[in-house]
Image (cartoon, rainbow, N blue to C red; front, side, top):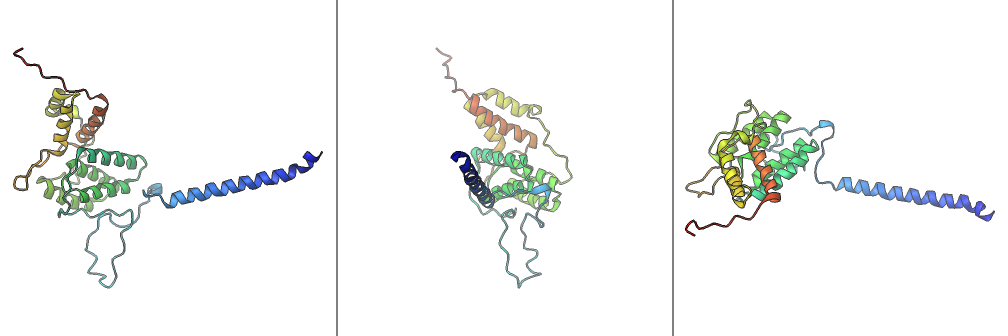
Length: 247
């Protein structure tokens, strides 16, 4: 009988414990949301204003100080190259992995910021980065931003980037390029295949006097080359020993 009489008290204690646990979980969730670094665009709503910074508006409001750059605002894509860093195949794979995650969650503006930051950080990179940037600008309807990026593309690679109205090459297939396929088939699945992929993604290293610009391929071909490079990590075999034909 006493146990029955005490049951309301135990029920109150249990409810209080559940309320405390719920409060702690809610507080933890809010703290995670506040510290989240990647921006999320809800329902396709994007913050107003261009993702590329220009100085065109400084003369109109000289008395106002420049506001700090928002976290979702990309660095400017300019023809001036201040960085001395050169992107490697590992840098491109890391960039591709982060880019695919942002695309998967529909955060296109964050993907633009990611690519433009890469362009600002590396003076030498792959034309693939600019072609991915063009796809995003087209999805967001940012023709002016792509024209600025085209000027930077020509300054870096000595070639003209695709026009805004040019058709997308994202559906192009590596199998339709006999030269690349022949190079890969001769080296697959050995380390030489990675050198082939590196050549087609980044070109040969040159000198300031004689720069070696990487070839400009279709976007779909670049994507398949990056996929094959990831696949090579799983299937690569030691290079076969060279057999002396005189023996």
